[in-house]
Structure formats: structure tokens, C-alpha cells
Length: 254
Image (cartoon, rainbow, N blue to C red):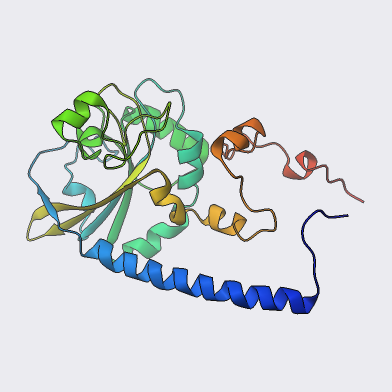
């Protein structure tokens, strides 16, 4: 017998109709937030950044690849890491199918990590990914787009625009001591100049993950907290590290 609240179809319809109003409100709020993101001031970037790519060294301007908008996912993969972060790997599993649609909306998407290019290419082959992925090894790019003042860099208070730093988590997207944290940064190219337009860290990128959105609509939802998920062995893994899902769930063939 389920421990969840049950009811009649009429009970469900009444509750679902009430919830629909909240969902519509959230949709309207999301549309307004999107408009406000577009209204943020642009910051011109004059500093030169160098990226190692499979086509040779490139500048930040080169990464636009002929388009006027650029999205950079700061993928947690440091110079000394043997593999990229499982959570970041989970995130970018969603990307390949989006690339053609983004490109046809004048948007280029790339991942950037501080790991050397040879490590990136090996891990990319292992995962079977096709999206562009560049190395910012030896560059200040990841630290600079943590958006820190000099004081924040020194004291470690720069995480998520000055909001409290979670225990054990590095500064986004990389702190001066080499710790890693995921982030998404947006840039515009206009009249030959590159501008930084937006960045988001941590749960700020949550809505971009299709799997989370699907799980939020499943009967039991996603896990309640990262610590609970880790204890239950339910935190996202690299896609080649899952066991047989049906066996793990105790499902057998009839």
C-alpha cells in the first residue's frame, strides 16, 4: 500500500487545476527573467585570452566561429584530473543535440576546461561527444570569469557573486588555487568587439538540464539534496559508469 496521499479523479483534477495556476505564474516569471537577463549591461573585454583547440590556438573572438553570440560552459576538468567531473559530464550529455539548433540561431557553444587539450580529446572520445571543447590551460580565463574583485580573489569570497560559499566547493569557475566549479558564461560580438553579457553558477544552470526537468515531473522526483543522493549512490554518474538500470531497480524479465 502506498504511503502517498491518494484520492479520487475529482480530487486529482481539482488539485491539478490549482497547481496549473502556479505553473503559469512560474512561466510568466521565467519569461520576465529572460527579458531582464537580456537587459544586463555588456562589459567589453580587451584582455587577450588564448585557447588550445584542435584547429590550433584561438582567441576568445575566434571561438565565435563567425556568429555573434557565444555560450561557454566551464567544464570542471583541471590540469591534474584524470577525468572530468561526473556532474559536468552529466550536464554536457545534453548538449550534442542542441548544437545545430543553437548554430542556426546565431549562437556558438563551446566547453572550456583548464585540462590540456590531449586530456580533453581522450575524455571526449571516451564519452562519444561531438561538441566543441577547448583548453584554457595557462590562461586566466576561468578565474577571470568568476567575476571577482582582487579582494574576493584573495579571501575566497567571490563564489556566485558574493553569496555564501558552500563547504568544500571551489570558486566558480576556478579559483586562484586551482579548484574547479562549473559555470555558464555568455558573450556577444559586435563591431569587432567582444562583450561579456551573462554568467551563472551552481543552481543557476539547473533549468538547462533536461533530465532534471523530466525527473521533477516523475512521481518520486529527483533527490532532495546532493548529500542524500551521494549517500544513496544516486548522484549522476558518467554515462559509461552506470550498471544495468533495470537490475539495479530489482526489475527482472517475466
